[in-house]
Image 1 (cartoon, rainbow, N blue to C red):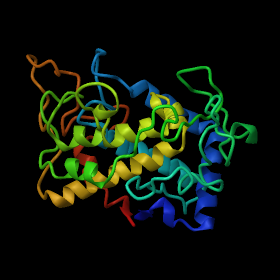
Image 2: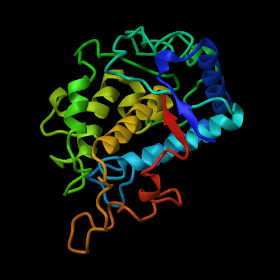
Image 3: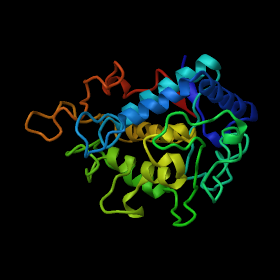
Image 4: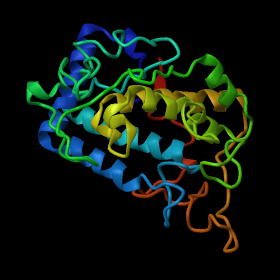
Length: 288
């Protein structure tokens, strides 16, 4: 059955409650922490040896599409009516608007230690203790907009810069690729600091706290961010008919990326699925 992913700002009160309850139930069962573990395991930067599947690589988009589908299937085993909403950060740009309301994801972290103290995922509620993390912190943290060194969320022009590129990805197929839709949307840029973070990466930086590293899945906003990223891939495909995932073939033995990235028809670890099989999401869901 094809279901709809909605803009988080349009969810009814009942839809918000169902989404939150399903997330909390996955956490209670221990299933949610396995998603955190998986993301940490597959967060492999350019500078490390081995296969890259989740970040700084062409498979950034299909990997996270499958990751979202796995989470959605788990949520729907709890409540079949639930799907992952998307957060349009070009429209909902405040720190108190959706999704940062008390009945959804809660608000900003407090100034002293960035601990989130409002909403259903606040540590004091007793339902969201971080079990898998890259630090010893047990509570959810956020620093929306970065108080000490403020940054802004990406806007429509940032997305347009990515969407107008007609090529999915280009050599060298990593974070240094200056052309191609994938890296422009993922958001790795030259230099250091704020100017080097675009689109997806800048949103992670804007949220701050646990969203800054491989354990970013500990903040449920991770899924809303990536649902919107996934929507951009769908929009890019509609805008550039016939454009496909690249590379279509694995880099040869003489390439620095040999054995380090996933080509269109290769399996995408840790699943038995290829990027090609994930190019069309219409058999699973639509966007509302």
